[in-house]
Image 1 (cartoon, rainbow, N blue to C red):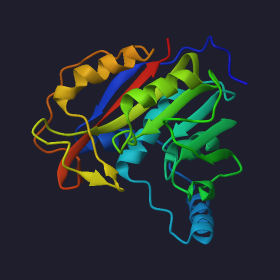
Image 2 (image 1 turned 180 degrees about the horizontal axis):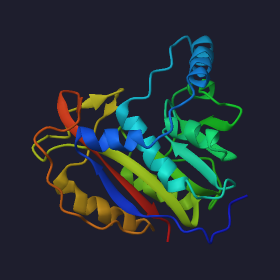
Image 3 (image 1 turned 90 degrees about the horizontal axis):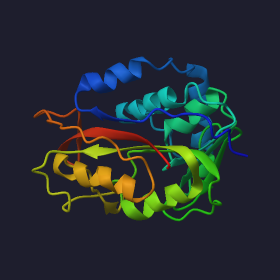
Image 4 (image 1 turned 60 degrees about the vertical axis):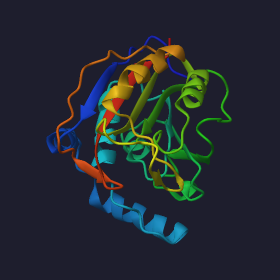
Length: 244
C-alpha cells in the first residue's frame, strides 16, 4: 500500500563537478557499521563467487542525495531502485527503517545482493516493469540511464508506476560539450552521458512525460572533472522531480 499522498517532496537539480562536491556529500553520511558490511560482502561472495565491490564515490554521492531526500518521509512509502545491482541506496534506506524497499536490474546476480531480507530484489527491465499503475511512491536511479536506457521510454514507465505526487530521483554522467557521446560503449551497452548543451532538452523531457520540469540553470564545467571514465573527464547531474 502506498503512503499518504499529502507528503511533499523536495525538488531540485544538483551537480557534482568537483572533488569537493562528492566529498562534502559523502561526509554527511553516517559511517557504515564495518561488521555489517563485512558480513554482507562474505554472503555476496559465497552466493555469486565474486567480491562485493566497495561503494565508489559517485555511488556514495547518490546515496547521500537519496538519504537527504527521504530523511523525513514516512517509513511506509514504497521505494524502488532502478539499476539496483551494487547500488547502495536500497541498503541505506533499509538500514534507516524503510519497510517497503525494492530494487530491479537485469543483472542475474541481483537477488544475491546485501540485506535481501529487507530489500525485495527482482530481475526486471526498468523500461518495462511488471508493476501496476501508481504502485510506487518513490523511484531512484543512480548513474544507470546513461547505459543503454531510452530516456523517453523509461520516463513514461516511471510515470506509469508512480502515484501522483510521487518522487523520482535520477542522476547521470555529465561530460564536456566537446565529447562525442556516440563513440563509447560500457558493459556491452552504449554510454550516453549528458553534456551542457543537452540540458535544455533533458529538462523539457521530464515535463513531456508528466513530471515537474526542472529549472534550467546555466552550468560551466571546470576543465578537470572529478571522475575519469572510458578515458573521459566526467561529473554528475542529479534531478529530484515529482509526478504531476
